[in-house]
Image 1 (tube, one colour):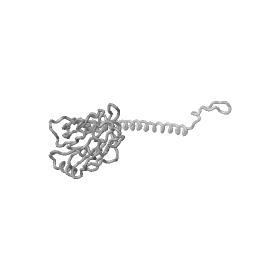
Image 2 (image 1 turned 60 degrees about the vertical axis):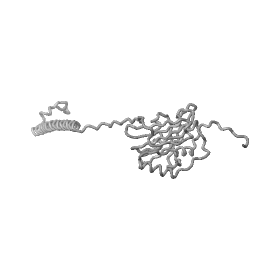
Image 3 (image 1 turned 180 degrees about the vertical axis):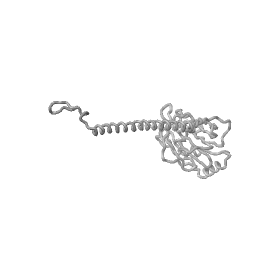
Image 4 (image 1 turned 30 degrees about the vertical axis):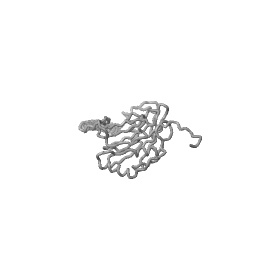
Length: 273
């Protein structure tokens, strides 16, 4: 309807001609036709999309079910040492200056087959000097000197603080790695000098340390002389025998002024003899 200028109300539907009404009906019909095509198409597209996602989810579940199970992490073997009833393992430490402290000599074998002969003079936790050599034979995993010393201390239940240094120790076996370390004693920390030698062709490792009674720096000459006291007495392996035979050719005499173990405080001389 439309309001005319003179106030009369006219009915537009009545004013439309036959052609205008047909055009309007055609537009309405076209809109209905378009909607009738779009709506079902959209519904089909959504259904197809949903079915596609459902098929993907089903395939993913099938692939997950058919996938091989992840391999479980291997159980690491806990390596343990046990004593072996043997008089010796083929080595000895001829160190008369250290014997007054008492010698504890043991032959051990680890659960993976590694053998060890241990020579321990004195006790790590005492207020006196202390020295130790461990001779390992077998399949030895590669590692550094500090790691070898730390592992040896842990095997013996010794709480040691270990730090690498870059100064080699001159022994009959040649220049070998040395390690700074400290062990707590009843009167405070004890300074120690660790050492580690590897002869991979002979499946041999020699490691250990020399400790003072207190925090005084350990003599490198004293430690080298202690290492040189290690000898073989029938290891039964030509490769090991060859290592020691070559070492004995390079062996030097220990310093004659090397102090005897546990001399105690030195008295200052005030007159000539």
